[in-house]
Image (cartoon, rainbow, N blue to C red; front, side):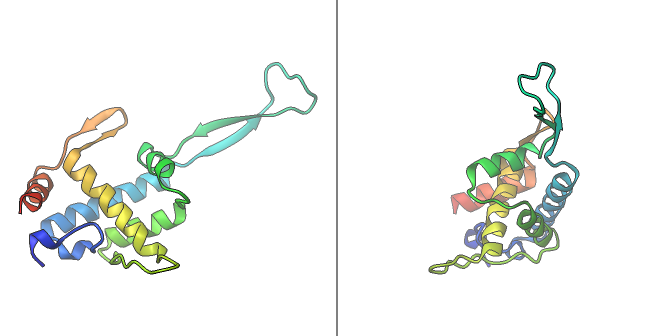
Length: 149
């Protein structure tokens, strides 16, 4: 497969080995980040209760920002399917996207979504715990060459 032939609908095995490795490492990082951080909601009695038996919802921890952003922009995004997709990408077993009529295969569409997310993170950089992580120079060069072909 030539450089100009890759897009996020294709598995990462069609990329050069150095770029594939970057995708695998980033997918593994995102998967571990999502496993380590999740929404935890607890209930407590409010300081000033208007009603007997009133409880207040309190968020103790949150999903990672990158996941919250995707969750807001992608209807019906499922955490478990996200974890499976990131695992497939991390092990280079991701699926090619195939459009079907009536029912889209959910696994391949998740893989496509996360390949695009990872490509963006590698080429544009991202915020991590309030600090900017710069783009990866090798990925930035590779993908800029694709866009100029």
